[in-house]
Structures are given as structure tokens and as C-alpha cells.
Length: 102
Image (cartoon, rainbow, N blue to C red):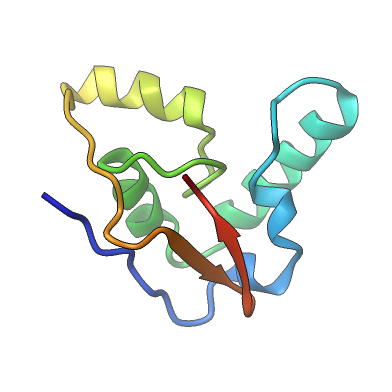
């Protein structure tokens, strides 16, 4: 089963550097500040819920819907989601930049 990557009109994340949403690892004060800032942006975005729902059923990396990969793992367990799929496309376009996710 393949999952289509959703396209959202004018997501708030498109207005900032995509690197903010794709930390290599969540360690150190500067990375934690970036994660907090990314979550804050997501929290104000009208697409947050749809974005999170997409991330819960796929293997995307980074912060989606204001939630880190580790937090999504816990949400999947709580919701009984045992199978996730890879997105149909290998690339996600954010703010006219592309970030490989897999």
C-alpha cells in the first residue's frame, strides 16, 4: 500500500527554513530550541491535524503536525496503529525546497 503525500495550501512551515522541521537528532540546547520553535509554528497552522494524521500512518521523518518522531511512536501505540507505510513519493516539497526523507 502506498500513501500519497498531501499537499496543503499555504502551510506555515513553508514560510521558514525546512531544516527547522528535520533535526538530525534531538540533542543539545539549540536543537531543543529549534524543535520547540517548529512545534510552535505547527501549533498555529490550520493544517496541523491533517499533517499529524498523515505522519501517524507513514514513515516520514522530522516534525509533522507539531510532533516529533518519538512522540508519534507513542501516539501510534496509544491508538493501536501497528503498521505504517512509506509515502508514495520519496520527496516532500516545502517552500520550493525539497528535503529527502528516506
